[in-house]
Length: 423
Ligand code: ADP
Ligand code: MG
Image (cartoon, rainbow, N blue to C red):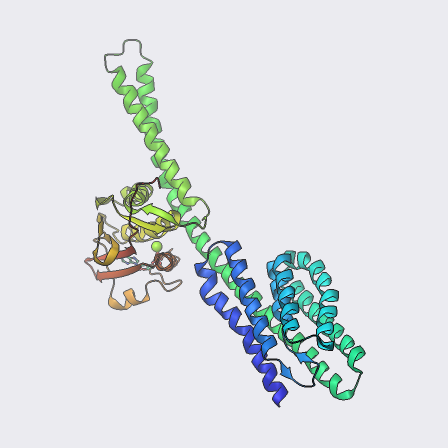
């Protein structure tokens, strides 16, 4: 019974780093390199803990689940973490003294590490089912090696062997469980990113037809003026026509730039962002869509509002909110957008419409996946906006009255700006 208790403690010592990683690290740490370093350290801690509280039996043997963090660390993170974790095991085992158990550890590691390295590449390329097979196979191989070495060094007595066999079964089953668990969590994460992207591209494709129209306008205006310029009896207005044509082309260029910026895949880097400037870009993108819906956008924007954020994501969340504001007014109306500094070091963005409004119950459901009252809605826009604002450590307050309109107040932590850098 004590042995079982010890094995269960070992299990807990491995679960903790996995949960710490998926709860606190994946969302907050953006760079893959940093994530790998943190995960290697967590697996390292898990190895130290597993080895510090081993399954107690016999004098020379320390049975524990150290292999699982080593296996997962190597398969998911690569060679260097694998070498780091193996070295950690050897040095920490050395600390407990040089005994038969120490030689056992070193021999088994020396024989199993190359095999794990060999399978690491195909593991990284494989799908879930094959990954499970590789991990379980490797863990079986490692335990079998351990069991054989142990037998050779200590003799194949029934007492010793039975614990070794329990160890083998336990390690293999735990590997199987954990690999399935971590693959499932990974799948959910990938799905979440895909949902975010697909919603973004849906918005892009919805805006595209009006966008094309908006590009055609300046082109037609320019074409008209070019035709006029072609006239040899052109009056003195030549300069003015050229100026208007250039301005129209610049405008078309600006719209294309903003659109490309919006539809570009996300790059995970936060930087100092001028909120006023981003709002202007967002309004540029949504302008033609709102005109099509007879909606006028009025702004009062302070340009000295800086936050630390990913500009593309900020734009995406603002566009989702603005698009809803426009869509809430089927007969047209006005959307007010203001941006000011608030108390407590926050930037306050206010987006207010004169639309259909929402009841308190509807406000409560806002941001839950697939909640939509629109015929062709996806109910993902708000969820994504909320997620993005939360990731910038901001908050959103929604005030709404049925039949009167809705107000979104977004607070974002201000970044003190000493020098004005480009965005
Ligand atoms: P979708 O726009 O695809 O329906 P969203 O997540 O963007 O999905 O919005 C969810 C729902 O929230 C909308 O269907 C709408 O009923 C409501 N909503 C969001 N913003 C507003 C607003 N400004 N005015 C009224 N209702 C809104
Ligand atoms: Mg929407």
